[in-house]
Length: 379
Image (cartoon, rainbow, N blue to C red; front, side, top):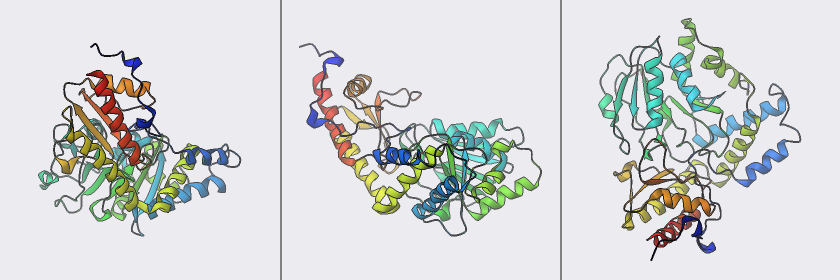
């Protein structure tokens, strides 16, 4: 019997997730966040970001970030415009003093390394790389090559591999700067192992792009101010010392996307009300257990990340065997289940599923049931 046309496959209603958004960024935004934007449209949106209503909003985000991550009292929460990709450029001006080391295991970790390589005022960085789907060992960097900044990635969004964060032994005064964009809010970490933990809010925090947030230790703020004192030229929009100064006043250097802060503030309140980071990480791990358990129990799927300890609890990548994953993704999209396609440059026969805190684990369970149904129809 011939397989039905992809457009003819209708997933039974009882198998459909209540919410079909599984994108790895932008990610699912909860209805309560949109309600918060509607409320803010009456008295906050469209008003000056230098006045109390918006500054109080930014201050609330900063305070809740401190609570969620249980930051030491002397840490700073720094906010700026432009997203994580802009922060990479800012770090080449304001965090890396002379030479950095980058742990690369996918598309996004490679971009920061490229930014450092292109910066004419820095020495060539050391790049420690492993194949997509694996994670480089931090122990490989325990040699002093004049490194003053280690650049790690907590979760590689393109591959679904996650790195355990630990501080390299040498040199002792090197900063540890971590890209937490897809991990923040969904994977735990220890502040003593990190100096800067930066991210954009359009993934785990279910907000819009165009903003970066950096959680900075005293060592990090000291480095920012030290580099500033050398007179190194830096465009104001990339100047971390200006971002630090403005954040202390509960504002950004340039006009921010106020609606992003509204959604972020609502999401942070939801996370804290439910139990904080411990609750969030248990929720993402529950979703991950469902997805990987399903993938390892099927003859036509297997997790792309081979080492279970490196499998991300927030972005799951599943390879398909003798089944066209692109066809599965098309049928899912035709039935309202969207953004399960793999990262475009990885080029694998796989699906990529986000499991950020806003994703209900029961919807992950229904997603796997929907895929089972599609594969049965295609066979």
